[in-house]
Length: 496
Image 1 (spheres, rainbow, N blue to C red):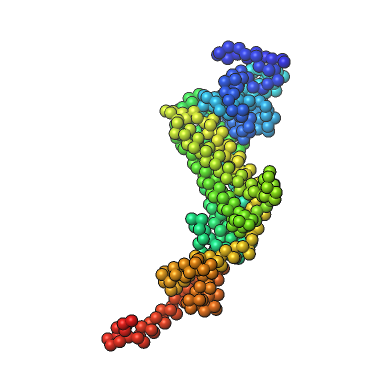
Image 2 (cartoon, one colour):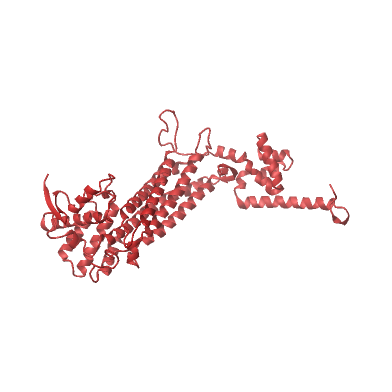
């Protein structure tokens, strides 16, 4: 294998001639080979670093501190990275010490080698140097958090697209299941009637709220600490650089990027990543709850709730023929667990920053990228292979609703809590419906029972409220008539 020699402050090392990375990347690859996952698995992040390098080169050219020819070569090399032409040039482990200096230098070396190749026909740093030219006016400490914020903006945009797909699917189910009456459950016990559409409406409202929350979080991702250089003082950046680099970065990204108001805060604190991760955790836990609900409602088919059917996408057992498992909801549950675990790691990394720099950014971007990827991809598969194909078992749902003892709530509202309790206990003891017991106890006529205890009517607040109020007023009038008719001297009720 043909090699070339590169030298740094620690000595010389042979580098494969075909490699566009250099000696600092090689050392980091050897030092941090622990996880089997390299930074080339984060192309959005690598691309964000490259676009910052391009903006910096253009800014330094504009203010007259970087030769136009060198700046052009740097920009071309950065563009090629953004296009994904150097997928194997970023081999450093995602987990690394040094506050991502190795990642920054990896990109610097690839750009420098490629820029030299463009200008001279061969790799090397004789014409374009990774530190002197590619890293001009920058530090790892301001480039990496800026690239992380730009990456989060892109990640959130992609995730919002997936949430829009889920929102459309849930909205269709709300309409489809609007009249599918069933029994609600609280504490996993029978409650009053509800429609399947109302349950799915709750899921829909959650998704819409999370989408709005993520959109707000995305707005903060355009505030960057770029220009802070090492600690926030801007030392190493030339006069005019700050304004020029943000102008070019805005043009290159199409985003309203701006410099953070306090650059020292931008390097010291990682709470902005906590906000993003918190939004992801909030979304994940709600999706996990939805997934568990679907598993319960589809349980059976003969010994469970059996209220809905979910698509059968694969056999469910290696031993039990015909068994189908809710594998797509279970996928979402596991994604939820991983996102919550990532949030814990991000929280610890944010808290662990010391003094003037948080150096735990490698684990932060690793966990954020994974959470975004899992949610963005998982939601689309959840919709395609599960939500879109959910069906209602209307007969089972209706049977549960009509046989529910909690319908005795209606009896309690009209005749009093104690009477409702008597009816519920008698229905439970005899196995009869609340309707049948109420008729047997002569509380309601069959016609009144049908009107008052219709489970679908009970899911509509306006209808149930009106019917209950009318019935209650009738009973009050009757009670007054009875009291007045039985009253003795002085208008007091007769004893007994």
